[in-house]
Length: 111
Image 1 (tube, rainbow, N blue to C red):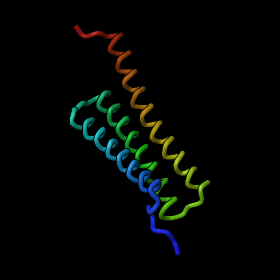
Image 2 (image 1 turned 90 degrees about the horizontal axis):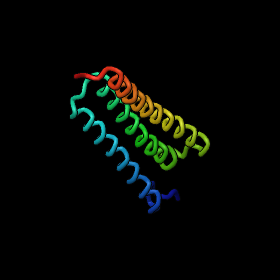
Image 3 (image 1 turned 90 degrees about the vertical axis):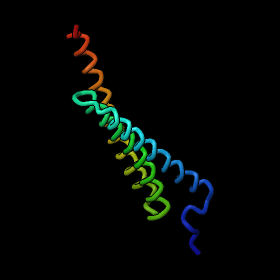
């Protein structure tokens, strides 16, 4: 007989942590939107929030592919790492935009 999905306490804990990560990603996205920043900083905040959300989703996808669909570990790990890569690239691009804005501001201070 097949064991029910998430019957193992560790699997359940992983799933709940996945949901917490996604909630934090949504919270970050909501805060980025609430600032109503436009231009370079607004775009940077959106990229960073998108990256954080993708990082949370990547972990949930990994859990679901393993627990629900029994995807082979090698494929699951590859999908997980690709999603993590997208998340980190998005965060890196956002931080890069903030750095560019700071450097531009330092070169052309407003009086």
